[in-house]
Image (tube, rainbow, N blue to C red):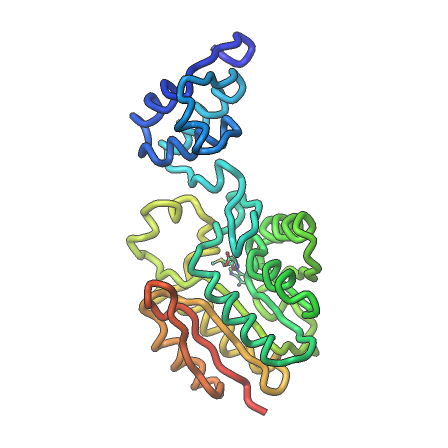
Amino acid sequence: MNACTGRRAALAGALDRAARLVPRAEAKLLLVHAAGIGHARLAAHPELELASDALERYEDWIARRAGGEPIAYLLGWREFYGRRFRVADAVLIPRPETELLVDCALAVVRALARSSRIADLGTGSGAIAVSLALEQPEAQVWASDASGAALDIARENAQALGARVRFRQGAWFAAFDPGSRFDLVVSNPPYVAEGDPHLANGDLRREPRAALVAGPDGLSEIRRIVRDAPAFLARSGQLLVEHGYDQAEQVREALRAAGFEAVRSWRDLAGIERVSGGSRGV
Ligand SMILES: C[S@@+](CC[C@H](N)C(=O)[O-])C[C@H]1O[C@@H](n2cnc3c(N)ncnc32)[C@H](O)[C@@H]1O
């Protein structure tokens, strides 16, 4: 049966059936979005009927979720830094821990007390670059990615949210003119080691491999960015990179080896060192 038959179902019945296939909390979340209602309405009126098109959408989502598709890809969006970003399977789903990188970046540019030039390398959905451009409107923000499909989504997000970001396609700094100098470079690059068992779990199974994996120890892309950053940083310019929960020490070492000063790491809300960075010096 399909939408044309006018098939309908009570919210409670649809939820109970879906909860046999996926965790109940996920079934509920998808139901409120398929029905276009809030959680409170679902709780207060489980007897309400789901229209046939919403029921069809809901059953499709539940089947795909049961097959491992991330909820963010089903809904088509994920919230980041208080805003809704469109996502699709060409981009990494923005993570809450990446908000720390935005916090650190804002602290750096606000301390500069002048208009700054910022580059976000490997922008994916544009979550970092767009958030920085909107939180710090006087900054000039560039963003790059190797993936044209990711850049299309990032551009869409910038336009939908009203952020002025200049997008460039290319591998890390190669996306920019060699004469470019930035006051701040931020990046959440791929940092999972090849063969890491986490790649077989959860959303990671469906996210682009090029957004996740970085060589045998997960550090190959971070090392490249750290190595090339000094040539693209203005005097006292800073580099901030997000990394894995157990990579902070190695990232600090790479930064010091590349000549960075005032090298340090920042902890996320779980107390884990998640962002490391340093200054190019004068
Ligand atoms: C971990 S994702 C981060 C996405 C986004 N910045 C975020 O935080 O949600 C890494 C991004 O780096 C991009 N990427 C991977 N290798 C790259 C390379 N060599 N040059 C430029 N971008 C690259 C991927 O396409 C992906 O969008």
